Amino acid sequence: MKFGIFFLIALHGGYVKRPFLALITFFVLALPVYSYSADAKITNATVAAVDDGVTIAFVVADAFDKDIEEAIKSGLDTSFTFRVKIERKKTLWFDKNEAELSFKHTVKYDTLRDEYQVTFEEDENRVERTKDALVMKSLMSTCAGITLAPEGGLVKGAEYEIMAMAELHTVKLPMGLDYLLFFVKLWDFETDWHTVIFSP
Image 1 (cartoon, rainbow, N blue to C red):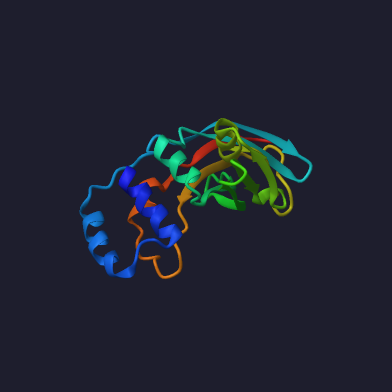
Image 2: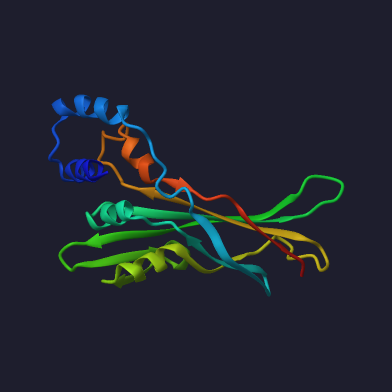
């Protein structure tokens, strides 16, 4: 894993020259692929009715390990993509997808200021800064509340499934190196869908 992080930093900084890429790629692809965040999951999900729909809040647990933290601190971009949706339960036909949203939390490490910058796409790209890695991880993995608003509103007494999942995307490779996806997939993961049954 140390080699993986070093290689990505070298790519990011332009230190690896193209004549060596084929050889490096051969050895890299020969290595076994591991899942470093296989236990990541949605937890602490809460649902509440609001005037125009329903709000869901949740946390992604076990999303970070030492290698991901080192990759972030090396300056490589990392994003969580959250997906949430609401489906109305049907008894005689398929469930109806009432509304669906996706949004990102993105972290960048500023080496000059020695601080993390976290951007919240769902909140008009609001930015929070912190020097504390624990705070950064909490900001990245917490959805404080997102509203799903079905067209026509919620039907009183109907049963709905409120679902959420998260994906981690680590490392934005330079132009022309998109085919080197091996290291990206070392850290990428997606959680299972977490479902909460709700009736207004």
